[in-house]
Length: 438
Image (cartoon, rainbow, N blue to C red; front, side, top):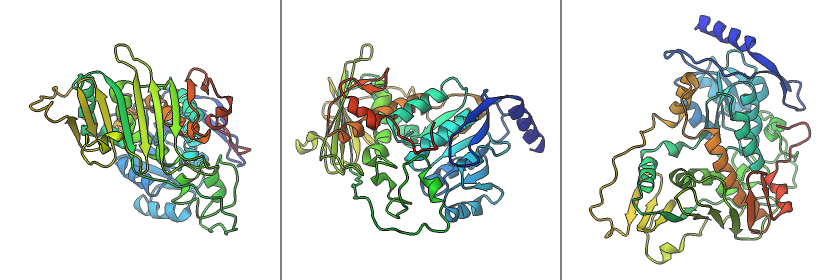
């Protein structure tokens, strides 16, 4: 591996294409970047991976790529990093992801931070010529999703968003049924998730920053606010500054299924329904209605999202089994209900004796393994940033409408704006703390 390490260093240094600057308040702001496609590794070689974020969901991602070399760990919480270092004692340790990106011999990074630092870490890594796996949602804001998608395009790097359920056999069988016209042309989709995040008033008490926490680095590009344990490590999704509540948390998982099955991209309109918007955080209960245009021979589709205690009316009408979270496709000849692990064609009598099509979507080798193999051999991934960026943009537009009091947005994807609402730009565009930008 020593010879391989030296070869990687030679290639990295020989292909430096310029200087990219991540503007920050740190002296580590200036990073020399490799901008050409990295060479493919031999089949029996292993990637050198750096991980940004080490605990909770991040540890699950680390375990997903642990068949490669974990050579660098980064966490703003030194206690969490120390726990991860026990599993990977040879890995270098960093508290600032910008320093990790300069780690010698690095091939790829996994970004598993709170949503508000996804984009800055991901874009910096892409500009460094590194393959990137980033947790969902891809970004905190719509504009960031577009920037990440466009930054990744054409670089020849392997990218994957952490939509792990996309790799399931169940999702593949559902997509096959929809795409083989089992229920006829689909004109309606209903998606519901019972998880809730409630908004809070911003804390006013002054709480000392724990000695093991680099709080300013945790804030990253977010506007400064004094430390409080209400924000981290567990409740950051309750705050607009750091996350987007239920929709941002689960939308990319459950709306992924209709996006994939129906070939959806940018919505025509987006309209939220629910409580009055709270300045600090997302709603517990919310409905969002998305309208998508025709795609070739496929008809327009209306997709309705429900969160918290809200459900599609079909449950009250006794038309659906009493499942938890799920997705309902409504076609001209019937319905299909699905969740992560199962599906059912309805009405049951209509589909008695139904024979599904022969599988035509190959089973996944594993969501993380897809990405590591793509890093090595230049093959594709199923949740690359082109696909994931489009999905994330659409999902997050629901929160934009909510924050405007439920205003119906006429979406102009070409110009990344709501054609009928200049005030929507406040929530579409990202606002970085002084010293940070993409």
